[in-house]
Every structure is written in structure tokens, then in C-alpha cells.
Image (cartoon, rainbow, N blue to C red; front, side, top):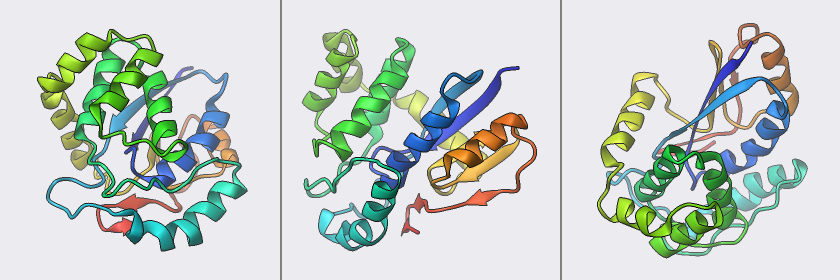
Length: 210
């Protein structure tokens, strides 16, 4: 039986990037249907994040955890870190053209491994090209905010489902928040998402990461 999984995440959340590895390893070759759902970690109503503010957290919590889980990443140096609505709109375009997962992977890699400014439309266009999308149509969709209303629907959905921190994985009727071990995901998949108690690990919300 196919298991439905929803993943709430944002590209500028370091723990979302780390969590992807154990999650991807756990669901590999499994009968699952995964829906990646946009979440805005730093909405316009909140102050921007500067790399100088994140150095302590990154060195004390993010980097050690990434090394433990064999995740290659570094703290992006652009200042401030980008807001993500346009990036999510790009993802929704890619999803509409059956390239959402591939787009997701390359955007995370571009930011956390390569230190690229994913808030720059030219960077997103290059990623769109890499995954085989029509770059001109992609650019037009972003410039005209074709997916803005769709994005608002997803963001409101997160509020309705009481998603307050990311990453959050909804597997069956079970909600997992934060970075999880591969074994946790695998145990939950074996029970169709019904047997484990709620798990809360390291995650981020609009007030910071913990």
C-alpha cells in the first residue's frame, strides 16, 4: 500500500537540508508518495537573517550534526540570506512540469554546498535549465508571479495543520518534527505511519533554531 508523506521545509533552514539525507535514504525504493510543501521560515514580517548571526549556531549545532550524518554543507556567506517566496514559486513551476523533486535537490545543494544566492533569479534559471525546464517560460512565471496564489494556499495549509517548525514530516497520521534518524523513518514506514509517538528533534521556526 502506498504511504502518503508530506514534507514541510524551507531552503534556508539548515536542518531541513540535513534531514533530507536520512529521509531520502529511508524512503529509497519504498512505496511512498511524497509531497514537498513550501514553508516560509523568514516571512517579510520578520527580520532578515545574516550569516554573522548564524555562525555560533552553525559551528556548535549544525556543522557537528552534518558531519555525523555525512552531509556536506557550509554556511552561505551572502548577507542577508535570501527570502524564499520566489524560490518556492520556482519549485511550484517545476512541480507543475514534473521536475519538482529534482529542482528541490539542486536548490538545496546550490545554497548549502555551493554557497550560491538562490534568491537571485539567474541562479534559479540555471537550476531550471539543469533539470530540463523551459528557462524562458520559467523566468516569465517568476517575473509575473504566476504561482503566487498557489504559494499562499500552501503557506495557509501549513498554518491550518499547525506546522510551526521545520522540517516537519507527516507520514500517515504521524507527525515528525526536526532531524530524524533513518531508523525512525523506516520504523514508521513499516507501520504505515501509525505506531510511533511524536518525535521532536532539532528544527527551526521564525524565532530561530533549537
